Length: 594
Ligand code: GAP
Image 1 (cartoon, rainbow, N blue to C red):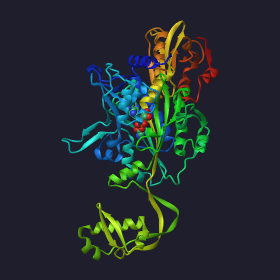
Image 2 (image 1 turned 90 degrees about the vertical axis):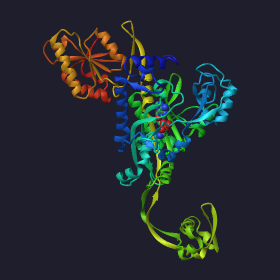
Image 3 (image 1 turned 60 degrees about the vertical axis):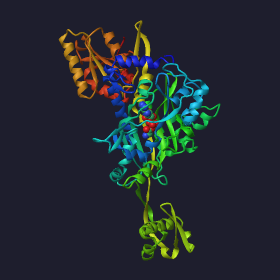
Image 4 (image 1 turned 30 degrees about the vertical axis):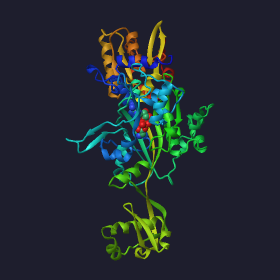
């Protein structure tokens, strides 16, 4: 399908066949909010389950579920209140708001306009002669403002307790770290996951479910001791990946680097082993759920593009309509989050790390003489004593002098060193408190769903008729099996079809039972929603000697095979898990010529 048409064709199919559509349309609709219909909700739920299985269960990580509204101090600490902004330019003519960096990128060669300051963005808009995409009015001269993306609210009546809808699920994990570390028995490394809603008051939502104001994230926070914890790369070192490092993006002749995770980590292209580990797992997972890996890459963030918390970041990107969209981010967040919450909150965000052997250390200590400090400094005496302790830890040599100068609430205070009773003691220490570092794979579920749908959208011709089908992987397809009695007026066929549907449902398969219209029409209906297999029940299967048989048809190729009805559940278990291929089923049974 040609560029630019994929999204439009998909949006039409998505609405008509119950994948997703704009919400509250009965009231005129509201930008950036989408409802998943029955097919879409099932597909999304299957993607979430597949993610949960791979990134929580298989990795032995801990899943939590935190509230979506959190009080203001959380976001003061996290930096979102001050720094979670996008650049807004408003049209003076029609009042429509636009994201300034996107306007610039859409109309120039610039790829990282979000690194511009608001003033630079306003200048660029004027230089490029940009106009309002809504009404065509000139935007030159309009100021560009920082716009905070968080949705605010009040918790309880009145305005005493402001709160915000979380802009990322991650904060729910960081804030609960003091409880979760106890659960993890204070042993690093450990990972915590959460799948849930996040909210951002996007200036200009676009590409339907790609940029919305309410969306689902699947996030993993891997807590590590950066001095000690290394991932075991053996399971991912040979995974082949297509990387687009920052240096290549900045180079005029820059190109992709096709390499393996092992090589990329060894050569320092991926600087952090944990980031490399999760890129490897993600590459395999995306392939497993059906992303077209020819339209997939990992792109490193350019230095100016990094979020306020990130030291390095790689995005998983998929190609849709000729554009690359970010579907997940893999950030090295250092100790930013836990340090910030440790500074702002009244709890302990560190972990005590036991040394392999107890260590003997020399420690500078003071024992301030309060009988002298009290009369001399009055109400400030306790602060002076605390400042002496801090100075002893930070700069013990300062006590070689006769006096030291301390900063007490911005005032310089001089104290005789004799009063401090400075000494160096030998102590034995069993370990130390460290603030864990965080590696964060953060997946957008909606963008994953969108990518799967776009990459699965196909058209061909069957029996001279045009056909549209979704070649979704059996692992995540919303409906697993269509069950069709060939005719609906023969009791035996209808009874058997009912039994087949019931047995498959009891085994956990999503089944659509359809007995109306020609068999071709029924296949087309299931093809369009990506049902990978249909079972047809006909007279040949119940007449004559031997097993009762039914016919399975494969969606993409239309190939058919007659199998004993008793083997259906086992066959579909294998087909859905990907442990059995349709070729295997053909080899073991009687092929039916279509
Ligand atoms: N905790 C890190 C974090 O939130 P992010 O890159 O801002 O990082 C992670 O978001 C993922 O969430 C993105 O890769 C994207 O897939 C998804 N996402 C972000 N904003 C979105 C939006 N407005 N609509 C849909 N998905 C979004």
